[in-house]
Image (cartoon, rainbow, N blue to C red; front, side, top):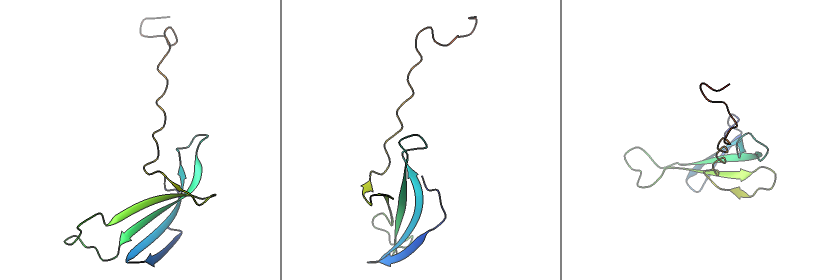
Length: 91
């Protein structure tokens, strides 16, 4: 999903925000450019983390709309049709 090095970073309300570019929806026809944003709790350390210290969000690069994370799974490949592929011993 992430396809770049760090593009931008800033601090906001106790969070360190890191922005990367990426692709949402795999590499197929439905793929679209996005920004992947990680927010790191600036006050967290290994001994004091009561809840997740890292959060992630995905934003459509063209519209600015948030997208679901994790992205929907790619559809499963269609099962083989009877008689379609030749199995062992078939010619």
